[in-house]
Length: 277
Image 1 (cartoon, rainbow, N blue to C red):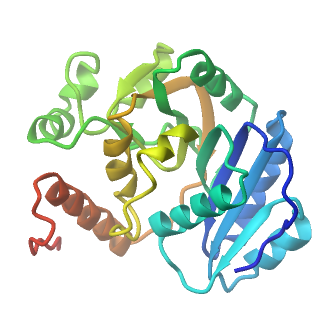
Image 2: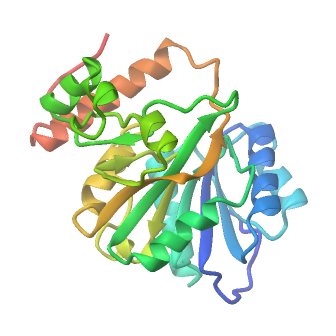
């Protein structure tokens, strides 16, 4: 583990925690966009999961003010985030608002700061998510929604939550409707693509569950968070997700495996031998 910054300094109110694994070019775009569009002082921590593409060296050279942790193995998303949280706490640089941000996202404006203003004004909100666009300008599916139940699954897969989004709650939120009408709404979970958190929540929800290597940990984390306050989707802010278009069947299977694992956790059946083919 190495650190880009040793000396402690005054703690900005805003921080970004980014997990990276072999995405040097995307990470570069992400960090550049933060530098360009975030106007208030901020702390950035990159946790690198043993990349072999020179990502860590790039951060050290190009972004000397960014904190860096170099893991010796690919520890997955949840565990790497927890290492990052522990680092910020140990260094006494945990900001008031912490953004868990994917390395394949970019900001194209400063609208994320409008979301932070909402958290400042409405203390009952514990976490929030902006609109998530794909690179081509299409809104991404699956960025948040309501607790996984037979009802929310039925409402989504049979399009009730798409046709009547304010009446029928779906497992996935119909982002297009709320974005079009500029309606902020309370949800049960939001994606780790850009999860904006009031850091005081970490006193009671110390981090992401580590039995998820990738996918599903944001669902479980939000289940803990919403015991402390509201989680909202805030469509008046936006980021762009440069989602990997080369993801194959294995990634989709991993997502379904994680979804079933989360469902088992809800029903205290963590060891059930479910397998998705």
